[in-house]
Image (cartoon, rainbow, N blue to C red; front, side, top):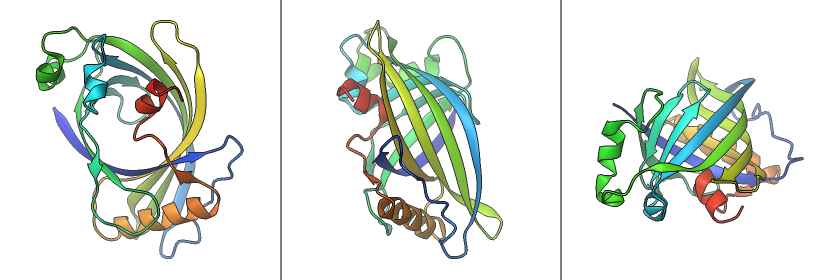
Length: 206
């Protein structure tokens, strides 16, 4: 089982938002954009015990990290410059398979208390990725997402656009660059996201 620390800022933007190119950030070399198609199915109990605890379990196809992802509750990330709160989440990963991996199901057994896990939502995302490098090393990533989401079974489609600024190794220069990228987004009209995750936004009705 692989473990990943995710530290990100999320922003709500309109469909016609013009993303800055981040070239004005000192010492930073932007690369991209690269477009990726992601398809995720989220699992929970019928009464959404994981969601109530701030936990998400998903099966995602597409992208560099396709597979099963278990995200544990968001907490305040390390103090860093820039607008919007930085949230830190632990993410546990298992390879792609048809059913929830036993290792991840065991991690949430205390929450599910024997209730079966089943699909509760699908999210299809068209993601445009811009990486930000310092001295040849990527220190932050900007993900510009157009999301089409449905609750299962048979929910109506909801569509929105959001942008995330993410670092995986906190500290300098990543914190400075991520903060500066967040400032560029805010200047362009982005606003800190109302929801801490895409699933939370869907379950709240958009």
